[in-house]
Image (cartoon, rainbow, N blue to C red; front, top):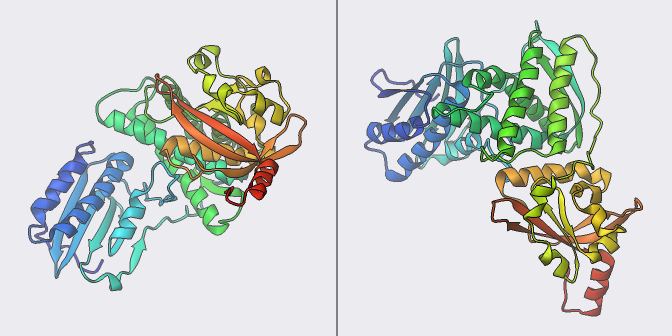
Length: 433
């Protein structure tokens, strides 16, 4: 850092509790009385992110220090978990969590992490009117040193689907931590379970971040991770914990949406591979599998009224937030070569070409987690899978509806690309985007 902490710098001890972020903001207001309001607001925003990270990921007591010297604000957040290193995540709009470190990077003049035997200190500085001197961030994510670790290779991992699985795990674990630190309970999971599996989850996140930074354009990657030799039970426990939390999501007990079958399948394969290789087995590459027979139960489909879909003049399909088809009109069935009743209850991936399915599931998962996507309400040219195995290029436009029980329904209109272009050519004023 540019300045050492003065011995008289104010400090505050915080407990790993949800209200600690609020206490940290109040502490900064008390400790930085001469700082202008804009700078103080930024400091409070960033300290909220770092204290929240410490509460969620370190689960230890936190020491907060803040002071201002020569016009610069210094804030340090210390926790007692030196092995729980910061892992910057993809800051894109599709990410459901993980923007905190990116926010600190963008708004601070300097930031970083200092590791000591007894803990780690996350810090940032604000330099009013001196942004031209900004040295940048230094979130260090060192690779595990070779030694007692066992090299584990996760072969042919699909990048898009893996990111979706990563974000879903992060959302489930984050919500579970928030519930447990607030004093509430989750049947089948306690705070010690979350602590036990958090390190392994961090290692998987770090491996994916490292691999994608080296090959940003790759659609498949080999993830190489040095795992502790005794980590096999932890891998299996992480799989069990996520299954328990996903079941709670399915029951409506969590805000996080339940994962799609493909995401569950990839996550289980990854963790089973880790356990198997730590027990002496060899790597087996991921083979994309899509369960097209995973039908929604009839009672889940009963509350949706298909009248809207059947009344549309263009081909239309409705599906729920588990990707199961609820309604198909005659125009859509004819376009894709199906009998409408054959499609009811099937997963929507039955209409997606195999090479596009993992991309579809990844994008759909990201939308369920973040509520943000670039294709809702906007015509997009995509291939649709015909019953005979050929593809039909269509302009796909998706609208979102909500049922009275809170379920999300997606209604897709499919306009054949060929007829759309012919219509546009016949009318110069018409445009298809």
